[in-house]
Length: 264
Image (tube, rainbow, N blue to C red; front, side):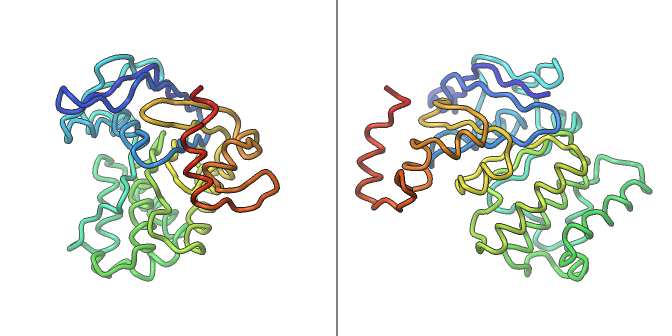
């Protein structure tokens, strides 16, 4: 469904962030994009959704195909109308609107009122807490409640591909587990494809079918999630675990960072 082919991204016509990134998201699958801060994960999502334009970014080489149609450097509205919806990092909300008004913003490109009502009920089924808070001004919601709301808003857009940027950011471990259970359930029930950027590598690889590892603007490793979970390089650096499951010290991890085998 989605093919990113060797794209390079430059900001302000000067700063190169992505250096030949390639990946695929098959129809109905969840694919994880993992890596450290500054690796280029969020920039990859913005290149797909068209949000690069708001940050003076541009795909200068390579191309992005959505069902065989090129979408690189599309404006975000046109991309959204194709069914590609991004849930941005940091829980971007309309603070002065109620929870339900925020949710309904996800359906602003739809005109099928009966379908919208059914999908709103679906969102409340996934997130019962939001139904209780539907009349609450969203700026007063907790971080976890806001994360549920922005995900529900994206669901109301009836996405064909959902781009999730750090959905676990700033949430408690219990909430993280709940959010990812819902991500997996929504994928299975709606067959919506997902490209997931996440620094919690363990939980990302548990829900995804395939993973791509990014470093310094490049994809340095990709494999099935099952194989990546057993990869000693991934366990040592991204999970902080040694060969026997022992947690590594910060000093050992920092030393390992300087000798990543896949960059040799």
